[in-house]
Length: 346
Image (cartoon, rainbow, N blue to C red; front, top):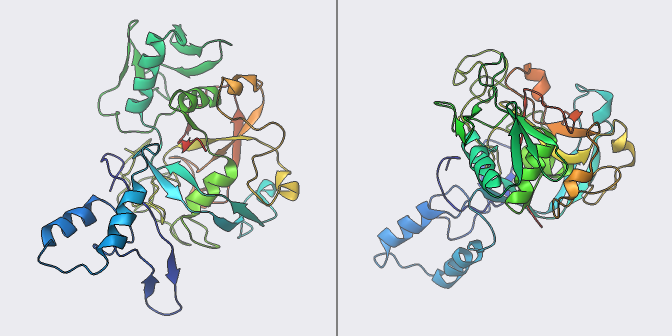
């Protein structure tokens, strides 16, 4: 699937065996062999029924029923619970992503793609109609605290991809499926709360970005080319000098797109350079107060407080796309590079 289609998928563990093959432990309802249960499998089963004798039809039906949770949207994928090694494994980063340490994470749901201009524009127009935002000199501000969310300056040197005509927000031509950028941490948090989601914690983000791989530099392995991601320069599949449409490159092992390159991504946590030294092993949420993204509690974050960013961007050098790399920015400042993706509220 891609970010532009609507499917429901659930991932399963793939075990790598030394040698030239990979053995997958896939559910019986997976008829296409990709270790996901989706509508392709359902269509194949329907086409073969009743000519094929499915011995375990009861088990297959149960697997299908279990993925249809009415509270889970089709724009997220299940990230399984488990332990992973968090941090820089290759001594390539800054001191803030040392030491590598084991982290245990409960299962959660992660956005398959970065939030797009189209999606953020829909949010702005809905929030506007409900009196939750206002626009002053092209900058979008939220109520009740008046925190700035994003700007609408399409003519600037690093242009916003959303425009404001005085009545409504629109997306610039051919930019609907590009990631929303030039959005503050507040603007990302407000979007997440509006749709009963949240920003992922830094630990959630890295667990999801690694895609089930252990000790690798990138979400897909230890090497990188322009066929893998949108980063500085062009070549191969990467034909974009700035942002690329979300889902333009292959997903990682959990089915997530663009977790390396394209747009930098805000996380929920407050940034602390030395946090890894004292981070708790189980479900770390960053230093100090945990933000729930309910009842506008994100507005309690100080404008000048640094929040974590992850994932690198379109102008990052290859070594900067290391999946363990960390960044940060002030919660209230509009930078030209950050975007975000959401996790579903627990």
